[in-house]
Figure 1 (cartoon, rainbow, N blue to C red):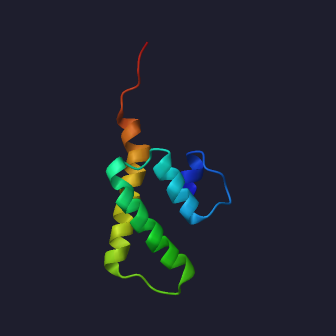
Figure 2: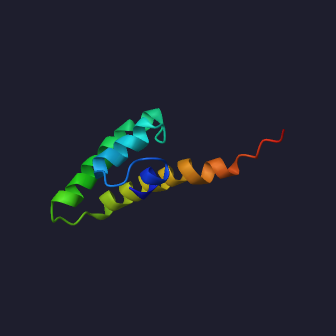
Length: 84
């Protein structure tokens, strides 16, 4: 939610809408759509069921969030500023 709102999504939306926003706005690589669906599914499970996730699920979600943070924040800051 915080990443999506920081990138222009409206506040107060659903988790699914934030994941969709990031995907549709180009913050997820084209071949990352499967990850988006997987994260949405896991997020819905976590939000609607009282169920602990296992280590494998947690590691998958962390890997995706790490990639997303690098793609949105880290990599763009490494591009040299244009000089005119």
